[in-house]
Length: 629
Image 1 (cartoon, rainbow, N blue to C red):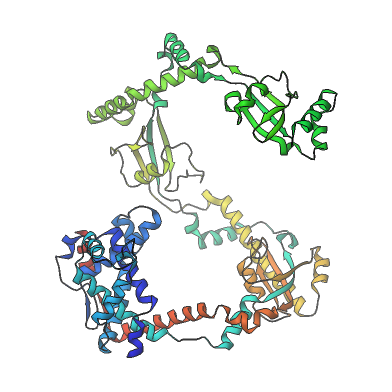
Image 2 (cartoon, one colour):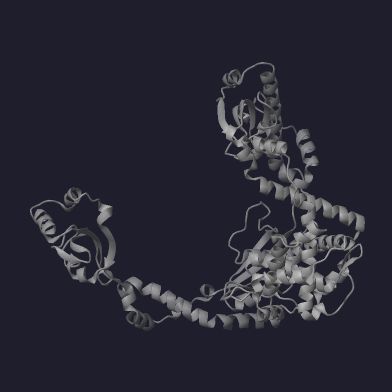
């Protein structure tokens, strides 16, 4: 018992408490729900979990998943993730441990609980690092929990940790097993192999009608036509109601004059800067340039490259050193240089390697762009009016097409589309705005049922209507004969290739070499050196590698390659395990991790045994009622 009580002092207990309190602090709980029903949600033996504990655990799990997504999950999303079942499992585990702790008469003294409480960072003063009673109360107040509730929960967590630590602590994997694991993880193999492609097969005869029918009947579900829907939709965005002719020439001129600076581009220059240690050296370099030496040749003499001296491309007012701007932009032509200038880090000579002249776009250059911009602004101003007018027309009894025609909106009709967005030929239907929402809602709607609009971003809408529903059905062979023929040929080719690979493997086992087989079938003999179990590539995927490691040296086997279209005939020619991998130091290096994993497995088996002995009951109806409230 002393050992069990000491386990409460471990980091496991502390971690459980920190996670418990932190999750409450982030996500909070609802007091109104916790005060209602006291009926048991989960029971294991004599231990019973009520609505309060169930709801706290549920919010904790939802909070953990929500943090991963960066937002709070809805109830429907939480259900889709199976969070309720996860919580039931967690609570059943805790209850089984509580029952065992009760039978062992385990507990945590008030003194020990005080020590654990004082060690929780969330309750410590940020300046002193010591437990602060005021902080403790504020945290509990924020999460809607009383001190007695917290102390009860934390005591249970600490007591459970005594049981789990007693079961798992001290568990050590035998050295022989560790050595086997090390050998398994580090083993390397050399493989000789052939990639057998369908090219080695004789030409396949076309399928007879009887063969096609037999194949079709056996795979008829694969060729079934899904449910299709015929839908019409219309889109309303500023682009859909733009009226270019409504923009006057006067408005275009006014806009151009008001924003003329935005249609002008300042002159920019690419500048190279050569820095010298003193004025004497700089003056000597300038003299060379003036006497005909090129700037590039001067760079070579100075031990510089073009990239060493390039400082970038700038307009005049964005030069890094404004004291050099006037000189740099006074150079008359590309390739020219300045005199010696006083730079920030010493005398410099600048070269202008490229000049991009200033450009001003005329009114004629930008006239149509301005017209379109102004028309889009005007359209955006009236978009909601068009939306309301369309909705009013539908409310008055007009059909989607009639209401669209009245507002000069284009209606698009798709004769057949399935849930994946493909037509009856299997081709994706393009151009549907907000396609995923439209298709999903279309398959939840009914014929001629008016539906609310779907938002397109923040300033657009799309309406749709289901015109017809074409039920799912089995297609006839005549409808899909080409597909069936292709699939039959692929299946027959695959089977023939597997049979051929097995035949060649038998020849290999009977003494024929891979080289001889390669020569006979004009195939390249390939080799892989030092492959490991966890290193797939373009030819050997994990399944291929698994086959290569399925036996001792000399193993011959066949497996599909990474593409799945070919077969690999292989032979293991060498098996190597690095000596240092089997040293005592290497084997024990990860001993702690191995022992922890094994210990967790032991605890899992122990809990399963407890639950089997005590019996587990889950009241799902009550849980659903709690969450609904």
